[in-house]
Image (cartoon, rainbow over all chains, first blue to last red; front, side, top):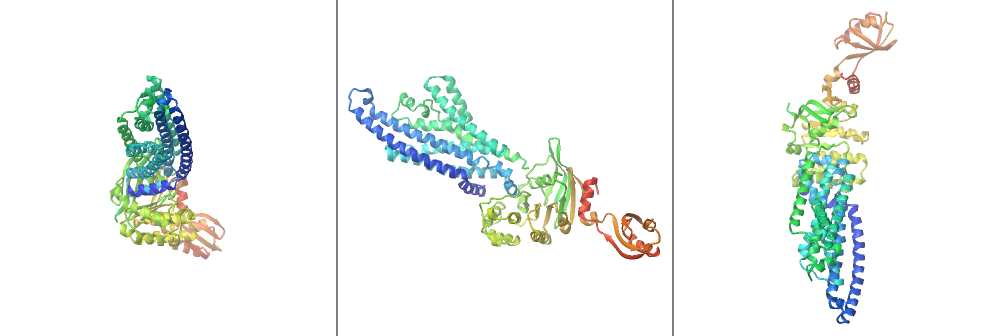
Length: 291
Length: 303
């Protein structure tokens, strides 16, 4: 298993999709950094002028507003970083099994004394290794940008990083499971559809919570059960919006926040979800005839 | 002789479509076994069942005395797939290192074994070149090297010379015969009948998922006794001369092809020709080729 994990990790580092993701990530971070710089400047200016007008409602809450806007900027960075690593997880592993079956690369491997279970778990670990390193670095760079440009310091960084890494792993598990049963193209379409479902479902749930519409909230919850990655992002958002605190804060972050915050059980559900799909991948591949 | 492959009614059905049906085969150790059949006959399905890529619908099989499905047996087998494709971003040596690790070749033996198989397939000079830069023939050679990396007792080669030039084919034949000399068994899937005829001890022909011909090459090619005759000035026709011995299959005056009932009748045929005033220039037994056997079996549904 470790032999396959090691080769998969090296192979994942060589994939063109990783190069594309790296270029897009650099572009994203550059734009985000520039945006952060100018937004921070404007906020400080507005706050200074508002504080100069006593009795003004905005002026009274000026610093709070600045702090919340800074949190919103952090959340925006994390939200789009989540999308990047989720798409990277999908497109790097979309043909993990199917393309190697289609091009015959797996035939010689399967003739070796390796259990099919170990091939799947090895591939999962290899891709997971690459995604973990990539996600952790991207997440930390977003936080570092916010710290140095906007002066936004965060606590709970290890826990937040761990939560952030769960997101691509959820997509990885689903995509590898799909790769054992579907063609590469069909798997790509299915995984991307799930990605859209999760993102839209998450937004719908937040909008439902903001307008007190139970049907929309429930729709979002169901979509979170089908694809829990967005719910993990909402947990990160909920942790980040705890201070300065209050319902107003959550509303302020709009669809990027967590007006409807998932419970901690969602972490357990997401981890079980990863194991379940890894198990499905193992079971499906063990039964599969490699023609 | 110990059997390295034994299958009993091994069957693979895809719904109502037959992949292979009730295949019973035995291959002994130290044998080179040729498996022939037209496209779509079920050759690859059968090999894939033995390798573990496809699960049989019914029947049983043993490789090296171990039941099919036991992963442990794969430590002792090697396989070159027909559509070979390898991690082309690795160099030849790295690729073999990967296959050696998968085959549980002990770490301290890997480097020596990798050099050994690279020498066998004559790729020592390209060991550190990326596989993507290899020609198709070199890729087939590295595939053979990967199949040999664990020094297997049983080797499955699916069209092992399809991408090779005549020298490359000769070298692969030499590798295969050298393995036989070391007591290894080789199961060959190939369309190159002349090559199989040169090296195989036994063959089986599959058609429509079923074995239609099976045996040692000697037994199968012995079959009919055909004699090529060049003779002139015969009194009477050749039909009259061979009456009671066999029949004339083809001929144009002095050059004829005669089928005899048995090998013992060859001297009698020579005597008859002389007795009938003929001048005999040539009388040679025409050996049946594997190609003739194959075409006869496949077209006729039997030998």
